[in-house]
Image (spheres, rainbow, N blue to C red):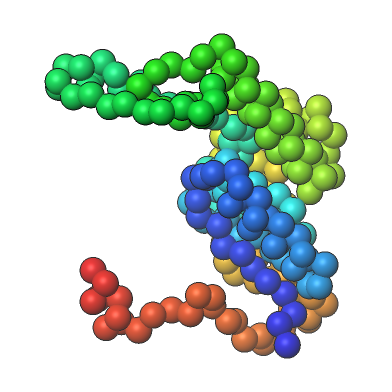
Length: 203
């Protein structure tokens, strides 16, 4: 009975794997019924990753959009621990097992491994955007590289389809689902909104 899905995105991003899991589910859903992404305040990095395969992307004029890039790093806390008189030890079974160990810098081999992984992820990001937005990868790369855009500028660059809020996204979903514009529809919100008393108890 569900004719279309609207995914509301308000995210500054996050880890690649969960972002890809969500995007993949969106892609599988799109094979059965249209999926429209409605961007709220922020849809950057992983937030844009999960949106890039939608049938249509609607964004607010001021939405922080894009940040098509990837970054990884760590803090070396050894100096801080030494000042506090604290120590910490480890047992390593392989050179890269200390990759995220926060008491040393990356070794040359670790840095090479991290850089290769980042390049691979970035290439996948570019490919996904190019396929979803029907653009050339080189064109995507020119506006990617971690840059962020306003929703208005993202529209000019082809990263989104139109400007507007949830009402605009609903209208787009109805069009894609071949529902007449004036025909009323029921909206099912998931997860379902919690009762007021339950929300107060969680404060």
